[in-house]
Length: 333
Image 1 (tube, rainbow, N blue to C red):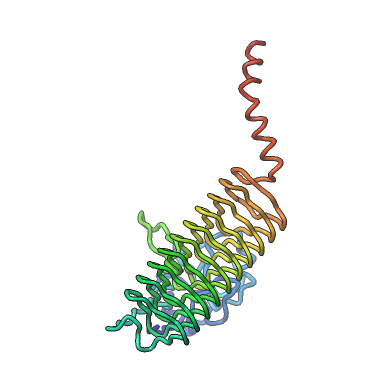
Image 2: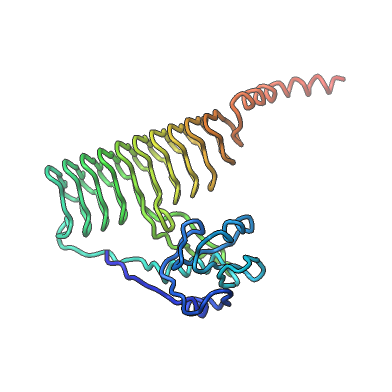
């Protein structure tokens, strides 16, 4: 995929977004969109949640999209009506989606296959993709442009890797799983849901196994990461910009919302739901059918909805089971 490098001056960005520059030279060149904590002098970032004002004041971003009332002292800002929607537009202009490169052959001429790698009939490999030694692509596998696979990877029938996906050594992906699809990001603007472009990628460490019919979304701007040795069951959903540590266990029908971080050796049992933008400490265990709604310290063992320490949950359930008899006795007076 060929990527167009795009830059805009701060003034040009202001004109496109209908905003007003403050504390920013109009000729400043903006070449990328970045989160506040990762931004640099050529970056544009945004602030839509007041609780991140402190982070915005400390950010070295060359330009920050804000609304009409937020005060960031002398930081360079562009005041716009809808900062989050403006952030989405900036991604479109500065990180345009590349066009997939066509090939008449199943393996693009620019792709490189390592020694001993096998591509079964019906599998396709995109431009500039690199496969390590002894990789196996079963029928119906599609690998997009600019992907990298380490040695000894095996992808079963129907697996799809979107562009720029990176797999470590000895990664197994079972049938019909998708790695690198768009994250679920939208902003409500003027009565409709406008898509937030997803231009990141997915990085999978060594010795990871991904079950059948699992989806791992690419990041909005940077990577979604799956740590080495992690084992993912069937029908698991990992949202954009999630960071999963090493040697974690994600059991069937678990869903992890965007930008959540898991430490090492975390176990999420079946049908666990995890909200976004929280952290689950290393060696924590979440029981089946639980919903984690806030960050957990290392070594936690929680169950329930919302998830709480396991002993609290079992005591609460025991009390609930005794409630009918208690109410019956109470009514008798």
